[in-house]
Image (cartoon, rainbow, N blue to C red; front, side, top):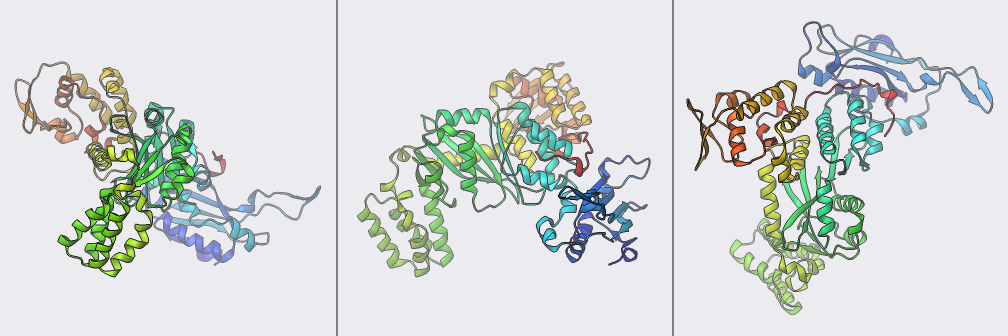
Length: 544
């Protein structure tokens, strides 16, 4: 391809150009980098600004790509300078069209003054570099991936972040809020290799770390809820002296094969003193790679939730076509066996009735690890704790605290809020509540919330609890609120989907927290104000 055939070429998304440019680079073996750029989201338009869809698609108003050798003005060979090799002038410029509907190649030079090396190209070329570079530099995300990060790292990433691709900007704001409230939190972000896409997020707060230091003997690890279509939430629970479960680490993740290893490694790195104090780790039936537990928690015996094993085997038998009324008694006999003789007899009973396909699955996946789930082989202390009940209670708590179809950023904020001490909410002054809403909301909704909170204490309301929630009478009208005090029938709430004076007044009377993210769950657009970003070009960004 020559310059003339490329000039004027139009691309209706940065992704379309990125795919084209990848193919071009692979064909020519040329290496380019982003010399400078102007994010579309930062442009100030006198009139006719592009729509949000166009901003999301194009991402830049201008973009200049330059050959990797542009900086090589002079090279040295030994102690001698080689004047024949100068910086390469190959480049390509994209600009947004006058109609603000596409990116156009406005200028380019495709001639290089040096040999193009296939070996060098294979080593340095990263597919999708241009598109990934539109949010955060890939070299930065590759550098911090799987490493613990702190509040300073998050603030630096916020400065580097050029736009909100893949929800990364909102996620960084949520992490900034986490560190603002708890500088001692332990956090890991894992990115998809060579992409600015979060794959896994691990964290525990200072309070959670204190809990597992106090109760390290018995832990539970399982998938608790599906946050959305892409992410699942896993939790590490510790068990106190009264048999109650407490969350001591969270792992929010896409599907990954080595999740148990990653979580345990991160957990032990966060709380190293528990490594030799854990006596038992109870896993969900679908958690794999049990062998890593011995490596990371040397004194821990692995157990698998017995009822989960029963249900998993039941579903497998159903898939094969076994009658339901025949399966369940056999499985209960198997899992509750009180001796090796009873267990082997239960296996024989299964073998005599159930199909060969089921028994092949059973021998391969479950017989070999019978010590983890058969009753008579169980770790003694596990018999005193109902792990299924603990997991169910935690799932119910999460269901009540997390917004439905939530994003990663919203899930992080909700989890952080869950683990703030109740007394902290009750002791906040009105000014502190207002400051917190201003910290997570855009200016206009934050101002409306501040105004409504100010009205809440100025009038004496008649408030009554009903079977459907609460009613409030202001002397003129009566308003109805739900049990969780997150919605109200007044026009202020129904028109803005923001907390109103009636909700705040009722929460004051009931001693419910005035700062509560669930008050904003129906208006996520109000959350996380657009921050001033530094506009640093990729070449000026230093790896963390």
